Length: 190
Image (cartoon, rainbow, N blue to C red; front, top):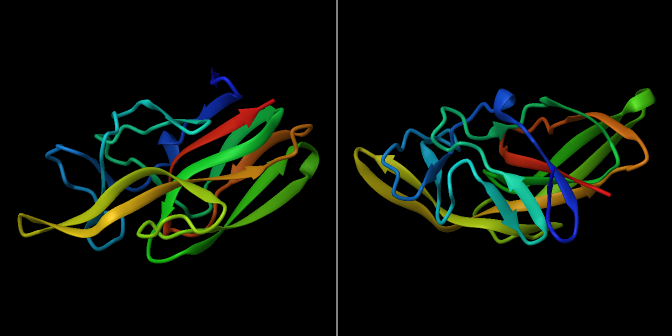
């Protein structure tokens, strides 16, 4: 359990469901990433690999960007939680190929289910919905050995949604939208 001066957090390990390599650390030679399906990747600046990242009052466990997969391209994966007392879920991620509607399904104990529908902003734009920018970078593509910048400024955002802290969350089903990429999920607890 991690905490800052405002809340306690539990970071969810997404390594077992990661299915996309889309992020590259600054000054890293391996550019075998493809976030969008067109060879474009997100270049991260001032990020420490596989670290705990604090943005505002939120804490996230960043993936190992040197690993084969570093994010979850959402296709409805299930994330096991089995914790009671969670009052908010925080998602560090980005949308590509336009703004998107994403639906998270929270499955509580005793077969109670809640669907959370949220709008998310395309990574090429500053946040427009109930999100805030946590990490800035650029998007690039390697064209025959030459690096071409696609977006000078790109954003990875945090979106949050409330949950019923009196109920135990069994699992969360991620959106079925492969254009939405999640790097980390953290749970804030009372």
